[in-house]
Length: 434
View: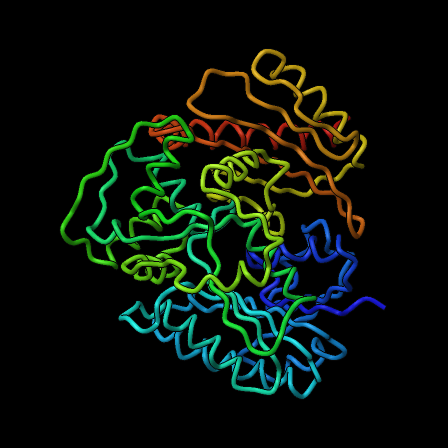
């Protein structure tokens, strides 16, 4: 019988990538989430057991931990703002107690990489203290400490991506010359998966890629990979709050999370003990360029996590290198009729502007723009039927390339809002009439 694995923080970036890889390896998987409905769009939703629970509510944890062999602790509370560090400790203690009572045999935790013997940010200190709290019990814990994670959807990578794409000359504080050891998201997964079968008591393992580079050079090398020429404007001091506000405006990273992350950049984040690679020599570490190219290869609507799909009405967001405009409406017609209308509509307006990228009859149609624009664009329609209700969704994807791409998206907002609202309304109306 396969080991039962619990993944906490199931709606998060690491967990959502880890779960399908656990399934591929034959493990039985259970997920714990505060908002399980946010998982409905995941391809693996019907392949695992999903429990509603909150690490801040101890009574909610017991059901999800019953029969679990190994539990991944992938929870953080950065989005809660000031005071989150105390919540992190309480959450870890709650989870440890519940896991001990349930007889869990192993906990795997992913924290942040920093030298705790030197002054470090509250964020990195809380990550280290969370690991320490989890190790105070009877359950063996494998704690991995990682630096900047390079992968599509990683908060660190998306912050780098959007800022470097947008600014020809990037304003940076002095501490951007601090050192980091970026690690590919696949190597994070390699270590997390390897630890299920190979562990020995409490372990704190530092993990990182094969190169040590400054945060400034991380941006410069990303720009080089994308074919951008980028310069830097060094500022002696930029208030953390001001930087977080700016990051929240131009990247997918919320201001409160950006504030915590920016504070962590003010310190070196490099491996000082090379014990992880000694224990797991089978992990083939990717260099920065390879990891970046792999992340960029996922710049396609069918390769990203569709985190917006459970929303209703109109949703506009930045996500995994894209600007996304998503609209959803109910239509009083069967899916076949709606899709037939979509096909006719796309043929009438898009024969020269768009080409079919992917399609599934009566389900979805994805068109790729052929227009000469500073980026890559797609237009997608999907039809779904649930509980006697038919929904039509329309999603615009735009991956900006450089400053011109950002200007194109923002300056075209009024025109785009009118045009694409008209598109979905016309399709819905014509589907009912036919």
